[in-house]
Length: 320
Image (tube, rainbow, N blue to C red; front, side, top):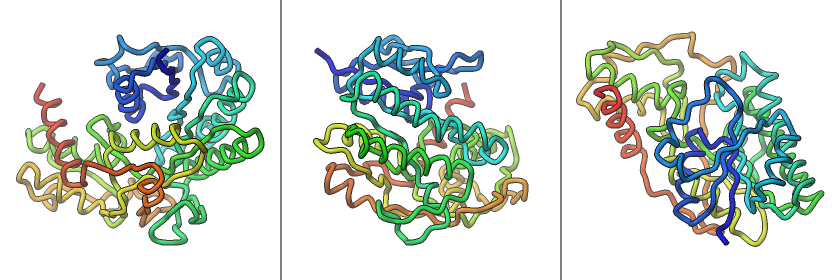
Protein backbone atom coordinates (compact mmCIF):
# COMPACT_ATOMS: atom_id res chain seq x y z
CA UNK A 1 0.00 0.00 0.00
CA UNK A 2 1.13 3.53 -0.74
CA UNK A 3 2.21 5.69 2.17
CA UNK A 4 -0.22 8.42 3.16
CA UNK A 5 0.84 11.93 4.08
CA UNK A 6 -1.25 14.81 5.39
CA UNK A 7 -0.03 18.32 4.50
CA UNK A 8 -1.38 21.21 6.57
CA UNK A 9 -0.94 24.30 4.42
CA UNK A 10 -0.95 22.48 1.07
CA UNK A 11 -2.07 25.57 -0.85
CA UNK A 12 1.03 27.55 0.18
CA UNK A 13 4.38 27.71 -1.57
CA UNK A 14 6.00 24.93 0.47
CA UNK A 15 2.87 22.80 0.53
CA UNK A 16 2.65 22.75 -3.25
CA UNK A 17 6.30 21.74 -3.73
CA UNK A 18 6.05 19.13 -0.97
CA UNK A 19 2.90 17.66 -2.51
CA UNK A 20 4.71 17.31 -5.84
CA UNK A 21 7.65 15.59 -4.16
CA UNK A 22 5.47 13.15 -2.21
CA UNK A 23 3.40 12.28 -5.29
CA UNK A 24 6.64 11.55 -7.15
CA UNK A 25 7.61 9.26 -4.24
CA UNK A 26 4.37 7.33 -4.67
CA UNK A 27 2.50 8.75 -1.66
CA UNK A 28 -1.21 9.25 -1.35
CA UNK A 29 -1.42 12.96 -0.44
CA UNK A 30 -4.14 14.54 1.67
CA UNK A 31 -4.19 18.31 2.00
CA UNK A 32 -6.02 20.23 4.71
CA UNK A 33 -7.61 23.55 3.76
CA UNK A 34 -9.56 26.02 5.87
CA UNK A 35 -13.16 26.80 4.95
CA UNK A 36 -12.84 30.27 3.45
CA UNK A 37 -14.29 32.24 0.57
CA UNK A 38 -10.77 33.41 -0.35
CA UNK A 39 -8.88 30.11 -0.49
CA UNK A 40 -6.84 29.92 -3.70
CA UNK A 41 -5.73 26.66 -5.28
CA UNK A 42 -3.51 28.33 -7.87
CA UNK A 43 -0.28 26.75 -6.61
CA UNK A 44 -1.69 23.20 -6.68
CA UNK A 45 -4.03 23.51 -9.70
CA UNK A 46 -1.74 21.30 -11.80
CA UNK A 47 -1.90 18.45 -9.24
CA UNK A 48 -5.31 19.07 -7.66
CA UNK A 49 -6.81 15.99 -9.30
CA UNK A 50 -4.09 13.84 -7.71
CA UNK A 51 -4.55 14.96 -4.09
CA UNK A 52 -7.44 14.63 -1.62
CA UNK A 53 -8.47 17.95 -0.07
CA UNK A 54 -10.18 17.92 3.33
CA UNK A 55 -11.60 20.71 5.47
CA UNK A 56 -9.97 21.50 8.81
CA UNK A 57 -8.51 24.30 10.90
CA UNK A 58 -5.54 24.78 13.22
CA UNK A 59 -7.91 26.56 15.59
CA UNK A 60 -10.12 23.46 15.90
CA UNK A 61 -8.47 20.37 17.40
CA UNK A 62 -11.55 18.21 16.88
CA UNK A 63 -11.35 18.76 13.11
CA UNK A 64 -7.70 17.67 13.20
CA UNK A 65 -8.49 14.51 15.19
CA UNK A 66 -11.32 13.63 12.79
CA UNK A 67 -9.06 14.00 9.75
CA UNK A 68 -6.37 11.79 11.31
CA UNK A 69 -8.87 9.09 12.27
CA UNK A 70 -10.59 9.08 8.89
CA UNK A 71 -7.55 9.21 6.59
CA UNK A 72 -4.93 7.50 8.78
CA UNK A 73 -1.77 9.19 7.42
CA UNK A 74 1.64 7.86 8.43
CA UNK A 75 3.21 11.32 8.10
CA UNK A 76 1.91 14.81 8.94
CA UNK A 77 3.64 17.97 7.72
CA UNK A 78 2.59 21.17 9.51
CA UNK A 79 3.28 23.99 7.06
CA UNK A 80 0.18 25.98 8.01
CA UNK A 81 0.60 29.28 9.86
CA UNK A 82 0.16 33.02 9.69
CA UNK A 83 3.53 33.19 7.97
CA UNK A 84 3.98 36.84 6.98
CA UNK A 85 6.32 38.50 9.49
CA UNK A 86 5.14 42.06 8.81
CA UNK A 87 1.50 41.09 9.44
CA UNK A 88 2.34 39.57 12.80
CA UNK A 89 2.64 43.03 14.39
CA UNK A 90 -0.83 43.96 13.11
CA UNK A 91 -2.28 40.57 14.16
CA UNK A 92 -0.16 39.31 17.06
CA UNK A 93 -2.94 37.36 18.79
CA UNK A 94 -4.07 35.61 15.59
CA UNK A 95 -0.43 34.82 14.82
CA UNK A 96 -0.09 33.25 18.27
CA UNK A 97 -3.29 31.23 17.90
CA UNK A 98 -2.27 29.72 14.54
CA UNK A 99 1.53 29.73 14.44
CA UNK A 100 2.04 28.80 18.12
CA UNK A 101 -1.06 27.18 19.63
CA UNK A 102 -1.95 25.56 16.33
CA UNK A 103 1.14 23.36 16.64
CA UNK A 104 -0.01 22.15 20.07
CA UNK A 105 -3.41 21.24 18.66
CA UNK A 106 -1.84 19.20 15.86
CA UNK A 107 0.53 17.39 18.22
CA UNK A 108 -2.25 16.67 20.67
CA UNK A 109 -4.45 15.39 17.85
CA UNK A 110 -1.65 13.01 16.81
CA UNK A 111 -1.15 11.87 20.40
CA UNK A 112 -4.89 11.21 20.67
CA UNK A 113 -5.55 9.64 17.25
CA UNK A 114 -2.34 7.75 16.46
CA UNK A 115 0.97 8.40 18.27
CA UNK A 116 2.85 6.37 15.61
CA UNK A 117 2.34 9.16 13.07
CA UNK A 118 5.57 10.92 12.12
CA UNK A 119 5.31 14.70 12.44
CA UNK A 120 7.19 17.55 10.79
CA UNK A 121 7.04 21.09 12.22
CA UNK A 122 8.02 24.04 10.06
CA UNK A 123 10.25 26.07 12.36
CA UNK A 124 11.90 29.26 11.13
CA UNK A 125 15.17 31.16 11.09
CA UNK A 126 13.14 34.13 12.41
CA UNK A 127 13.42 32.39 15.80
CA UNK A 128 17.09 33.47 15.90
CA UNK A 129 16.12 37.13 15.41
CA UNK A 130 18.78 39.22 17.17
CA UNK A 131 21.38 36.61 16.43
CA UNK A 132 23.61 35.37 19.23
CA UNK A 133 26.11 33.66 16.90
CA UNK A 134 27.03 33.71 13.21
CA UNK A 135 26.29 31.42 11.46
CA UNK A 136 23.29 29.96 13.29
CA UNK A 137 23.02 26.22 13.92
CA UNK A 138 20.81 23.90 15.96
CA UNK A 139 22.47 25.00 19.23
CA UNK A 140 22.27 28.77 18.68
CA UNK A 141 20.02 30.45 21.31
CA UNK A 142 16.77 31.96 20.06
CA UNK A 143 16.09 35.71 20.32
CA UNK A 144 12.98 36.39 18.20
CA UNK A 145 12.28 39.96 17.10
CA UNK A 146 8.66 39.73 15.93
CA UNK A 147 5.38 38.19 17.12
CA UNK A 148 5.83 35.69 14.29
CA UNK A 149 9.30 34.71 15.53
CA UNK A 150 8.02 34.40 19.11
CA UNK A 151 5.15 32.17 17.95
CA UNK A 152 7.55 29.98 15.96
CA UNK A 153 9.75 29.54 19.06
CA UNK A 154 6.71 28.26 20.96
CA UNK A 155 5.84 25.89 18.12
CA UNK A 156 9.40 24.63 18.03
CA UNK A 157 9.68 23.96 21.76
CA UNK A 158 6.24 22.37 22.07
CA UNK A 159 7.34 19.96 19.34
CA UNK A 160 10.45 19.08 21.36
CA UNK A 161 8.30 18.77 24.48
CA UNK A 162 5.82 16.34 22.91
CA UNK A 163 8.67 14.34 21.37
CA UNK A 164 10.32 13.90 24.75
CA UNK A 165 7.13 13.57 26.81
CA UNK A 166 5.12 11.22 24.59
CA UNK A 167 7.89 9.57 22.52
CA UNK A 168 6.51 10.97 19.27
CA UNK A 169 8.54 10.90 16.05
CA UNK A 170 8.35 14.72 15.85
CA UNK A 171 11.03 16.71 14.02
CA UNK A 172 11.49 20.41 13.36
CA UNK A 173 13.12 21.93 10.32
CA UNK A 174 14.60 25.33 11.16
CA UNK A 175 14.28 26.63 7.63
CA UNK A 176 15.99 29.79 6.51
CA UNK A 177 14.34 31.96 3.87
CA UNK A 178 13.28 29.91 0.88
CA UNK A 179 11.73 31.41 -2.21
CA UNK A 180 10.33 30.49 -5.62
CA UNK A 181 8.06 31.83 -8.37
CA UNK A 182 5.19 30.60 -6.13
CA UNK A 183 6.14 32.93 -3.28
CA UNK A 184 3.42 35.35 -2.16
CA UNK A 185 3.63 38.93 -3.39
CA UNK A 186 3.89 40.23 0.20
CA UNK A 187 7.38 38.73 0.61
CA UNK A 188 10.31 40.96 -0.31
CA UNK A 189 11.85 38.59 -2.88
CA UNK A 190 8.65 38.25 -4.88
CA UNK A 191 7.80 41.93 -4.34
CA UNK A 192 11.12 42.77 -6.00
CA UNK A 193 10.95 40.24 -8.86
CA UNK A 194 7.32 41.12 -9.64
CA UNK A 195 8.17 44.82 -9.44
CA UNK A 196 11.10 44.36 -11.81
CA UNK A 197 8.86 42.57 -14.31
CA UNK A 198 6.28 45.38 -14.11
CA UNK A 199 8.95 48.04 -14.64
CA UNK A 200 10.43 46.12 -17.58
CA UNK A 201 6.98 45.92 -19.21
CA UNK A 202 6.23 49.61 -18.54
CA UNK A 203 3.52 48.84 -15.98
CA UNK A 204 5.32 50.57 -13.08
CA UNK A 205 8.28 52.87 -12.49
CA UNK A 206 9.49 52.11 -8.95
CA UNK A 207 9.62 49.62 -6.08
CA UNK A 208 9.28 50.92 -2.51
CA UNK A 209 11.34 48.98 0.05
CA UNK A 210 12.53 49.24 3.64
CA UNK A 211 15.96 48.27 4.96
CA UNK A 212 18.25 47.48 2.00
CA UNK A 213 21.06 46.40 4.32
CA UNK A 214 19.10 43.51 5.90
CA UNK A 215 20.81 40.24 5.01
CA UNK A 216 19.21 36.84 4.58
CA UNK A 217 20.15 33.29 3.69
CA UNK A 218 17.90 32.70 0.65
CA UNK A 219 17.40 29.30 -0.97
CA UNK A 220 14.95 27.56 -3.31
CA UNK A 221 11.77 26.18 -1.74
CA UNK A 222 11.85 23.11 -3.97
CA UNK A 223 15.20 22.14 -2.44
CA UNK A 224 13.99 22.73 1.11
CA UNK A 225 10.89 20.52 1.01
CA UNK A 226 13.21 17.60 0.21
CA UNK A 227 14.85 18.16 3.60
CA UNK A 228 11.42 18.01 5.27
CA UNK A 229 10.73 14.62 3.74
CA UNK A 230 14.19 13.29 4.60
CA UNK A 231 13.68 14.18 8.28
CA UNK A 232 10.66 11.89 8.53
CA UNK A 233 12.54 9.01 6.90
CA UNK A 234 15.11 8.88 9.73
CA UNK A 235 14.96 6.24 12.46
CA UNK A 236 15.05 8.92 15.16
CA UNK A 237 13.41 12.38 15.21
CA UNK A 238 15.60 15.46 15.52
CA UNK A 239 15.87 19.15 14.64
CA UNK A 240 17.78 20.43 11.63
CA UNK A 241 18.83 23.81 10.26
CA UNK A 242 18.12 23.94 6.52
CA UNK A 243 19.99 26.77 4.80
CA UNK A 244 22.51 27.59 2.07
CA UNK A 245 25.24 28.94 4.36
CA UNK A 246 25.39 32.10 2.24
CA UNK A 247 24.05 35.56 2.98
CA UNK A 248 22.79 38.22 0.61
CA UNK A 249 21.43 41.72 1.27
CA UNK A 250 18.16 43.15 -0.03
CA UNK A 251 20.37 45.52 -2.04
CA UNK A 252 22.05 42.54 -3.74
CA UNK A 253 18.62 41.00 -4.35
CA UNK A 254 17.67 44.18 -6.22
CA UNK A 255 20.92 44.17 -8.21
CA UNK A 256 20.48 40.58 -9.40
CA UNK A 257 16.78 41.02 -10.20
CA UNK A 258 17.20 44.23 -12.21
CA UNK A 259 20.32 42.91 -13.96
CA UNK A 260 18.23 39.99 -15.20
CA UNK A 261 16.29 42.39 -17.43
CA UNK A 262 19.12 44.84 -18.15
CA UNK A 263 18.01 47.64 -15.81
CA UNK A 264 19.81 49.70 -13.12
CA UNK A 265 18.15 49.07 -9.74
CA UNK A 266 19.24 52.45 -8.32
CA UNK A 267 16.99 54.23 -10.81
CA UNK A 268 13.87 52.46 -9.61
CA UNK A 269 14.18 51.52 -5.90
CA UNK A 270 12.79 53.98 -3.34
CA UNK A 271 13.42 53.59 0.40
CA UNK A 272 10.12 53.99 2.26
CA UNK A 273 10.08 54.20 6.10
CA UNK A 274 6.64 52.53 6.04
CA UNK A 275 8.38 49.24 5.24
CA UNK A 276 10.85 49.40 8.13
CA UNK A 277 10.18 46.77 10.83
CA UNK A 278 9.63 47.94 14.44
CA UNK A 279 12.46 45.55 15.43
CA UNK A 280 14.71 44.59 12.55
CA UNK A 281 16.53 41.32 12.04
CA UNK A 282 19.74 42.39 10.34
CA UNK A 283 21.72 39.22 9.62
CA UNK A 284 20.54 35.62 9.27
CA UNK A 285 22.80 32.92 7.84
CA UNK A 286 22.46 29.24 8.63
CA UNK A 287 24.90 26.38 9.07
CA UNK A 288 23.35 23.37 7.26
CA UNK A 289 26.22 20.98 8.02
CA UNK A 290 24.11 18.71 10.27
CA UNK A 291 21.41 18.33 7.59
CA UNK A 292 24.08 17.64 5.00
CA UNK A 293 25.81 15.07 7.20
CA UNK A 294 22.83 13.25 8.73
CA UNK A 295 20.16 13.61 6.02
CA UNK A 296 22.45 13.67 2.99
CA UNK A 297 20.67 16.88 1.97
CA UNK A 298 22.13 19.56 -0.29
CA UNK A 299 20.76 22.52 -2.17
CA UNK A 300 20.77 22.46 -5.99
CA UNK A 301 19.71 26.03 -6.92
CA UNK A 302 22.02 28.97 -6.16
CA UNK A 303 20.94 32.53 -5.34
CA UNK A 304 21.39 34.23 -8.76
CA UNK A 305 19.65 31.35 -10.55
CA UNK A 306 16.76 31.48 -8.08
CA UNK A 307 16.16 35.24 -8.41
CA UNK A 308 16.55 35.23 -12.19
CA UNK A 309 14.03 32.38 -12.50
CA UNK A 310 11.56 34.35 -10.37
CA UNK A 311 11.94 37.46 -12.55
CA UNK A 312 11.39 35.42 -15.73
CA UNK A 313 8.35 33.70 -14.23
CA UNK A 314 6.83 37.06 -13.26
CA UNK A 315 7.45 38.39 -16.76
CA UNK A 316 5.54 35.43 -18.22
CA UNK A 317 2.65 35.88 -15.78
CA UNK A 318 2.32 39.60 -16.55
CA UNK A 319 2.65 39.10 -20.31
CA UNK A 320 -0.28 36.68 -20.23
